[in-house]
Image (cartoon, rainbow, N blue to C red):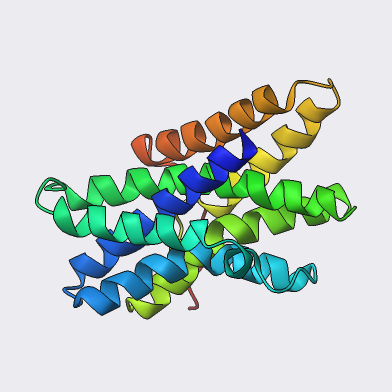
Length: 200
């Protein structure tokens, strides 16, 4: 289940990156690069921080193949994604839920404190999108008033709370990712925002 979630998250974030790049009218190379850094950016930062080098995607070409497949799908079916913003949001939300879990588990795997694991999960989920938005000349979503990273932190808290009940790992992964995805959808639907601050 964990490996399957990893692949789903990689595919979802790569699609998110490709759709963002196409909305900026980039050429094929630009679309591929944005898809690639969106999919692996957060995981690369995480692996470097925990001293896991070479980083994951360099050791397993399956990730490269998944990103390439997402790139091709985005190009071939770009006209099907007529509601580009909605498609981008859905792929980004799925990636957010899945990659938070992956970061949490990587932190647990090297024996880190739960708070640090939650920070790693948040980085894994958010920083690919930060790199994507910066390269596409957008203010990253994580730095705007929209609730984004906060949902990853909430998901991490839920994960460790449920872990005390010794649930089956697959059930734990499913519940945690569902909580993150559901809260993200509700935050957008009901316009839940964090307060913003302006200098006078």
